[in-house]
Length: 258
Image 1 (tube, one colour):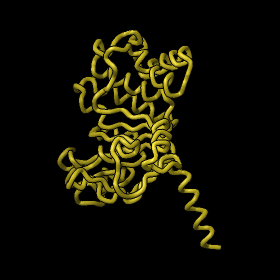
Image 2 (tube, helix red, strand yellow):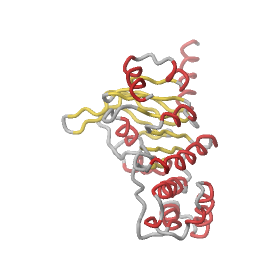
Image 3 (spheres, helix red, strand yellow):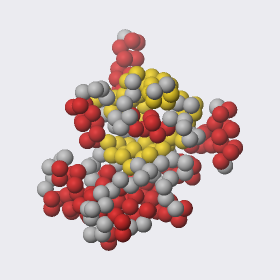
Image 4 (spheres, helix red, strand yellow):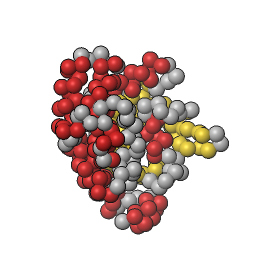
């Protein structure tokens, strides 16, 4: 009976976790970028990943939607295991939106067309419905007046907000952010973080964000995960992470940047 109860509890936890990573390894040639990463993310949770440059945090987040292929271990996203099967990869990517350091917008398309392209091509949404949704998203990210402009006519902060709207247009269950403010001028960082805060507060999706913005992490994260040399060295709620970190490496890191 006890064994059955424990198994049932584990099954419930597995269902609650939308991302499950077990002993994930990644090599670039001889360089061991991820060294046995094991973690999970609950549905609706906001997880912020921090760490020094080269620690593996961006590599890790890119394995979640197969932008980087892991070579050992298990990655399961919304019940689908990440394998070499293209059907599994496509199924996962349909549910995962991603915003990068660079904006990756199509320069020859208007803002509106950038946002509607994937919903019409991938989800087969009628153009009129896609455009209506895109305009709602532009309103949500605070730039409805930019719909007919081209990316080159926008500031960096505006382009990144378009990139967020484009990712949201696919109605993802999970949003991944890979240092989305690192390419922005300081005065533009705040406007992008405000959009991310609104997304986190809405509790409508799971968010995993790699960022150096510790104020954002302190304010919106449910958990902060720190990477160092390809491994997770700390995983705590913000209050504990900043006030009572258990790992000496974390204490040194915080002393250098706070």
